[in-house]
Image 1 (tube, rainbow, N blue to C red):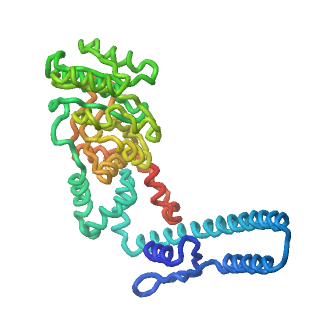
Image 2: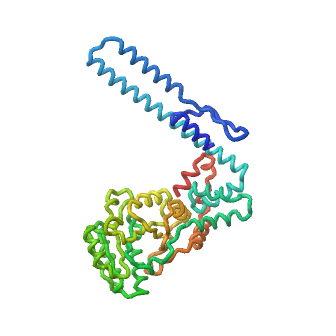
Image 3: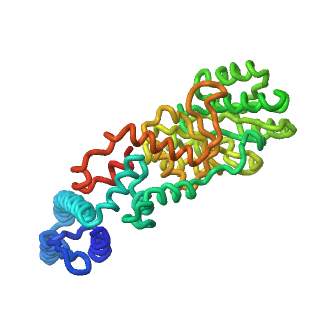
Length: 383
């Protein structure tokens, strides 16, 4: 049904009106056409303008009448377009609901697998792809899907703390960048000398941000440097090049902020040795996560660090993000303790956590009526 709707849209455009639908032997049949009333109205207007052009009118009168006529025409066309779009959206939802009901009746095993994935928080499109790759009637289908998810998740091959180097944490405000910096710094000092570590902050916007990082740094006897411009940052990086690890705490900002393109650690011209890791909260909706990753993709990202895992109601959203955006995950943070609540990612354990949360929150996805109304994708992607 969705394929047929796409063909109608390609043939007649967005103004097409669905006249009828029915099942046929090899699929579905849709009868569609352009709105005859809209076409007739447009022809009448063209006829009126052509007749009016044949008679003499003063330029002032002609201009005034033309402006008034154009205004009325635009209002009528806008109203008509809005009505057509509303009817079109209603029909598409109804057709999607019919398609869901058809699959549920004829392929119950497939639908059951999709529901299990959606319960974990896996996105709608990815759920469809994962189920299509397996035989839904096979008793091992669910195990095969989980194995495919595990193989599809990109993971940082090496512990970034052991690897060292210049690392910058970027991301929206409030996701836990400064706390994560403190955890990474503490973990590093436990394995190495404090003199081999340096901390840099570029956050000159949030009140108390530098003081918070300095408090952490004083506890582990590590100095904190402040960079207010790219020039200062490059100079600091040059002077600290002998350090085994340099951690950079950047200013948090919205994924839609204009300053994003001017991020100090953008990875261009002099800061190419800096590895940027996106810090993202596990308690974020999937569609918001996707927007964040694509916006911060303006700077060169080497991977991501997942925070607030203990606050998330489901983890399928982050699994979906990692697979669809091909973003390696490096570390997990699941609490406020420094440095205990920081761990290296093991994909199987991450999937197991997602399954446990899915069983604990079965009530998150029980609205069958929403699926029959064709709203399954909107609900799953908004979780």
